[in-house]
Image (tube, rainbow, N blue to C red):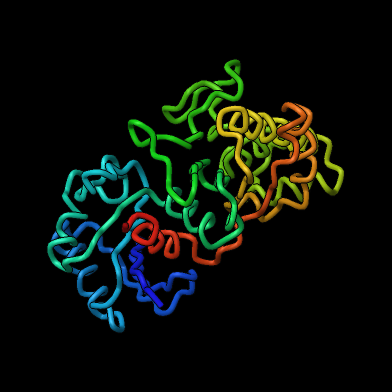
Length: 299
């Protein structure tokens, strides 16, 4: 069975895994990124970790998932708050030369979406739209087992889409942007303001609503409406076979998602109401998705 190498590179930790073509994680190594030590230190560490994998020489290729905008053609990071010293560095080219293997890079949401499309909840569907609602809101479009990047690499990204132009702009995003209104921190902020006391996380808001708190219930109802509008907007453009939805906020999905789907169906054409909805199911979407990059693109 063919095997692939996945690299999940973050500002705090880097993980390297050997994954087979069925998405089984065969081996995982983890170390601190030590981002402040500079590009040579970080990349040499990754090279050493890859070389420590069993039988790494016979893996078909290497995939990297990294937070933030990625130039997938050049194999470089465009913007990164956590890995600023790696911006513009030819990472993929370095690893290609070092290991003499195909190397592919993409952002962490895209690789998670690819992993879910090929080996997770979206498997065996032609058009998969992956959405994550967590610290941020991001998306990835996978068509016939290939990520659709768009002309400038931003296809599928919905965090800065406007849900409501009458709401304020926050954190450099558009007025009423999806991420400003639907992310976990956004829900926590709204709940803390409305209830005039600290709310630890989005799950607490959903629990309060379930217990009958009127202000919490109103916020959750607004969230359901926003979620349904977002999904319907995506559907009118993409018309997927399935929405696969992950992220921390979905841990509380029993409090809202059935209503979201019902409201979505009220907003779209009759022929679009049969789209499937599934919760993301991979335990290691970043690692598996990164490893799926070479599997998807090696010809």
